[in-house]
Image (cartoon, rainbow, N blue to C red):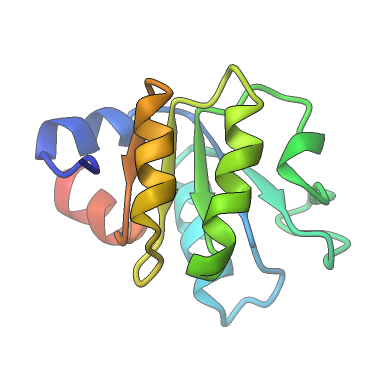
Length: 135
């Protein structure tokens, strides 16, 4: 079952490094505004987008598998039908604690695979909304 309790969500929001799959370089998109909001609050945001040259002054990684630094949370800004493949990449890593899909992004089967691996899964929730509500 996806993480839903306030205490668990606060715990996830207490982590530091968020790889944002689908992070956008377009300032008007939620996939840019929300990671920027988190960056401004002290989180380490690692953009993952093969189609961008620069986001938040960083060169984005093309794929999650390419991310060299340790990741606490993988935040997903991609369509629901891409979540399973992203989870495949997460399951190849030892560092990821949580997979978080943004509002409107759902894949319960992928979520079960995340949870079965001993990690947390937050589904269909906005990081910014939850941060403002809980922190």
